[in-house]
Amino acid sequence: MATRALVLVHDPAESRLHRIPGALIPALARRDIEHDVASFVAGHGPEPGLDGYDLLVVMGAGKSVYDQSVPWIADELAFVGSAVERELPVLGICFGGQLLAQCLNGTVTRAARSEIGFTLVDSDDPDLIPCGPWMQFHADSFTPPPAAREIARNAAGSQAFVVGRALGVQFHPEITLDSFSSWTERWTADGESLGNLDIDALRHEVAHHERRSVSICDQLVGAFCARHLGR
Image (cartoon, rainbow, N blue to C red; front, side, top):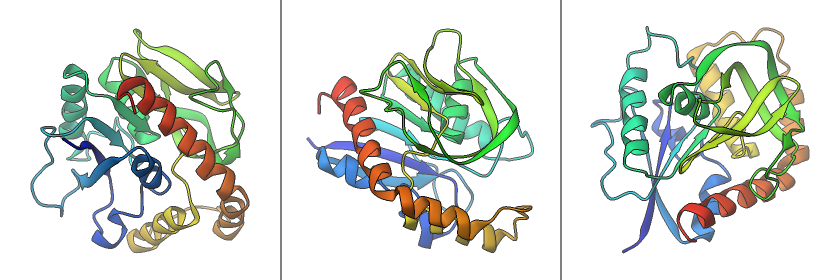
């Protein structure tokens, strides 16, 4: 039977659904892992289920996990909790890492300062989390759950933790020029105010780092899958 991953995204637009995971998709395919992309955000039909999946990946979102006005967050939090209870490997990215932390009794709060752009991180497990540079785009931050082991950090705070068969990261290993474009398209569609963010400069930064970003994303996915799926 094929190994399958469920990838949760947080964008209601069908045209962007399969672009958001970026470099994660070829990294999974390289390990012969098939994937489905789904969402709890309104507009995608029935909520996804876990049956038939060997791996759960939870992507970033433009929301805060502690925002109780967002109707789908509670359901997704319970869903991730069910995956952890089943001992399904879970990879949480940015919002997904924060959701995983919240699920396991860590904390998520407004960060002392936002991180935008590429940064280095200090890693205790460079085979899994190379020192980067990694793409950052977040205004919230997590404190690892009590049972977790923090394995990466920088001056802004915690950057990665492991607990059981789960890995939560604060950065965006999936970033490619196309996945970044899917972000900017959503910002435009939603009429988001991004303050003084220079999108063209950030796109240039993504382009500059893209080749290495794809490579270290592949390394992260490969190490995670080798440890928890034997692939």
